[in-house]
Length: 90
Image (cartoon, rainbow, N blue to C red; front, side, top):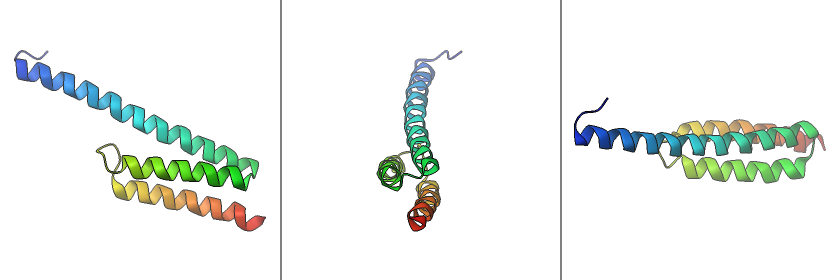
């Protein structure tokens, strides 16, 4: 348990940051799930729209402590490769 006022404030700040980061990670995960669902269904148009949303979220969150920019780039690259795979089939 924090005893000093500054330690109590640090606990409050940490809880707020953790909640914010958890919310951001959840948004990215949900968007990736929507993308994967569209890819598995073979719907290239829906997958492209979902990829744009995921890409936008990752770009936005990579400028925060939630996600490193290289992590976002790597994940976007892997998703783009999957998207290119289903668009090439059609």
